[in-house]
Amino acid sequence: MNSTLLRGRTLSFVRWPQTLEDHSAWRYEEDGGLLIRDGRIVAAGTYADVEKQADETVKRIDHRPHLLLPGFIDAHAHFPQMQIIASYGAELLDWLNTYTFPEETKFANAQHGRRIARLFLDEMVRHGTTTVAAYCSVHKASAEAFFAESHDRNMLNIAGKVMMDRNAPDGVLDTPQSGYDDTKALIKEWHGKGRQHYAITPRFAITSSPEQMEMAGVLCREHPGLHMQTHLSENHAEIAFTQELYPWARDYTDVYEHYGLLGKKSLFGHCIHLSEREADALSDSGSVAVFCPTSNLFLGSGLFDYQRFRRRDKPIRIAAATDVGGGTNYSMLRTMDEGYKVIALNGEKLNPFQSFWQTTRGNAEALSVVEKIGTLDAGTDADIVVLDARATPGMRLRMETVETLAQELFLLQTLGDDRSVREVYVAGRPAKADMSAG
Image (cartoon, rainbow, N blue to C red; front, side, top):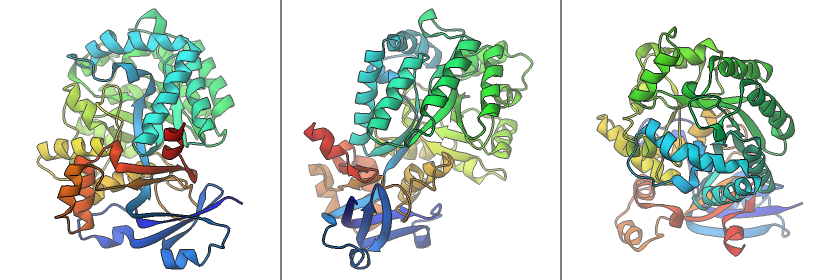
């Protein structure tokens, strides 16, 4: 049996932290222990208590004084867009046509897909992310490449081949039938293989015909346990174009409603410009709005009203994500730093416990995988990130005046990046050190 005992300052969440003083919302051990066996956490608590359950054969790793948290979760990212991140000067629709679609045509080549999938998951791990909900390209081979790479690493990831049959170049189009057939084949091959989860992925209403949207709905009915991911209300021009394409719809959300795509495992990227009716529809169906702050700022799309969505009489479930390449980096620390600013521009604040809840347990709840990941609870998969709040000279200097855990977390969120991620465990296996050695 493969067993490891980790020692460090452990932090995980049991629920949303209302305030900085809401101590019952999290579990923090100044000298904590995590006993891992065969990829799962079997005991968590004080080091003294957990150590009693470890015999002399257990490998002991001391990460003090660093923080051990559940691995970060990224709820929306486009892995084929790595080579267009940091592309200048366009809003959403121009950006897709100028940069994204030409780039994604390259993924007809399976070798290219495998190379970028490998580099993408390297970046996820390097930045402390152990689970991502990923969009592949339209090509079946791109999803095969992603899942093969993810499975090799024993990561819990959610992904799908995008379905798109109009309003894009020929090199990134499928048909309603081929999109359906390829998706069915990928579900059969990959969903539930190891830790892999399939997401039915119509890119968005603009690039799917009514016939393809119908097929996406059929897939959701045939596979009710699967995720569905798409985009919603990111940009004013996108909303106007959608209304032109679907003139019968009450609003953008109504298109997805009509085809049966709302639900508890439905992930809608962006959701910036929602009407009250649309917000109610998402809430009533248990659908998830995915907050992508770096992307929304970079593309000039608008400000996601995070706290209002949480507070409304019918609250909306929320996840957070990088969105690369419309986003500006691969880090959930950087994402929540930008998220803090977006929320501040809406006249609100997000406290650091809330930020770290969101990127761990909050995203796990939004993705309906909290029984497996997102906490440090016994019985869950041992996906863990080790964070160093003194990783850079500037951080070390600031840490001289930090007095509380909340201040340390906010420092990590504001100044931290991949350098703050000392180690990452994927199903109990050290993944960042292995990657560096490789």
